Image (cartoon, rainbow, N blue to C red):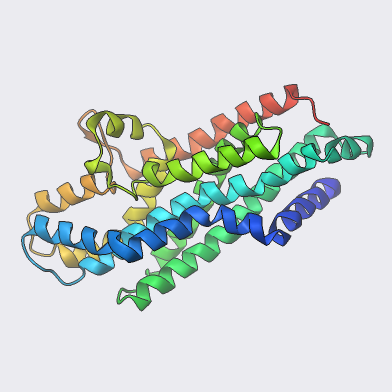
Length: 293
């Protein structure tokens, strides 16, 4: 256990010391915030007010909560993927062979990279959660209630676990920094769409929507939105028909419907956690067969 702890701390410190890697891990988040501040925010507010039929107090708070919840889901993937860059760099520089010569089990070495990515993801995820709360308050919204904040923190831990295991599986096929950079670029582009940020889920083609319903990231974002948006939606839709609120929830990826049935939060948690366990097992099988050096 002592060797595993040392490896985990070492891998986490190597990543956090490289400010460029940390920056590029958060680049997708920064791009989303920039796009939102420039034009997505106002256009989203207008589209919701058009759907409701009038200007309503609290819409800006609701939209801010929607985008911040999506950003938390995105960061769980981009940060853990960024942390796995240490593994790729170590292999490209032939450090893994040196580690394996030392009295360290191969399984411990692999576990160290995984746990370091999880630890970094959870740390920066919780920091992002606090920054998101600060942003919402500064823009005129309100803080989450203590119970809701605790729920959001636990969901972020779950999202980091699931996203980290998925990222680990794909990184297990990468051996060079160039290939890793390409993977990071592709993932950084896709996650914004999968979380329904660049375009609301309901604005995408029906075929794309059908595929997204079976992607864990969609459910990660939906779970976080349900926590962040409950209070502002109560304010915005006071006195409005239930159908109007349900329509907005479906369009903006707050609720997910499969086969005409609404996916419950418990089912979403099961999907996200199950995907994490599945990809963790696949990653272990993959790394056991992979020659490290």
